[in-house]
Length: 446
Ligand SMILES: *Cc1c(COP(=O)(O)O)cnc(C)c1O
Image (cartoon, rainbow, N blue to C red):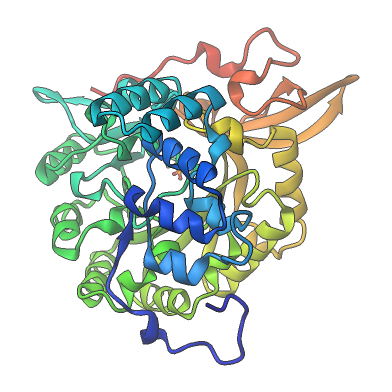
């Protein structure tokens, strides 16, 4: 494995092997490779009964630096850690695994722990699912006027899971926690009935886990709709399986589908999730980016700020510069959401702002398309613009990048500075009794 920029990059096709997933079954063998003791490995298997684990041969062989594991950031990005969950819970489940307790008993214990991890932050299951015709539209979220999210049933996994993923609940065996739809015509009919929607965002999981014929079924009916300006695809595939666009059997067909979207007069916005600059290094990624851009698609990049993985301004500066050099457009830096092992990964808002600013001030204007640090909270996306002293009080300056009530977008507001605050809920209004969004009427989308 090479992670440095060698003068002669390896031939792109040489890593084009067939996709091979690693799951909890392989965890013991892989964590042994990271040099962990038997007890540590058992604790990690215990964590993996609660939180999902999945990776693949490309991540394992091309991205992880095993000589630095278990501290390597890419290792930490995909492998569960012992201290992600309360020690009592880990010890209890490890005990069950040690004495080979029945599966149902282990699953019941894991379920209890999951329910304490706020599996659907921002009221995902209740708040955003629109009603239409005879009932709700499964697998859809319509939070902002102009954009709907759609979760195709066949897109509800990823090429590998990130340990910090806020959609982790989609990947564990909890049917009540899943968002998924498989009715492409219902999606189209909903859009026709809601002509203000101009953007459709396919997400998951990972929309790029789908094969070309399946994705086509969802995308093609939208191409006839004049109102649609953009089709977005939320995906980590460029980082975790770039072969999808280069050597997979449907790679060429997928690129033709992207081209077809562009030729229909729509923007195909490929929303690429990159968490660390190392994910940009392999020759396979560069080739995949080149091929996707060749279709006329625009690649925009986003990721959350994650403690112990990318909480360093240099990491973000390198990512944004490299992405810009590769023709991608930096889009969002997110704040880690209030779900799953968030205490483990959270970066305080004050520190997040410093990291953002320190990276942002060192990149050219072309990379300053990025916005953040941004919290995707219940009322909308809130950006931390700065920490300052106003009228003798230390405050956070904030604004809505997106809001359920579009009238609040772009209006500055203030919160009392709190060095420990990690989320909107931790903040108290400054110079006012209430935040502007507390009196907001949630629009009825029926
Ligand atoms: C981020 C997001 C969008 C898209 O917002 P943009 O600012 O247009 O990128 C749409 N819906 C939800 C629920 C979101 O979180």
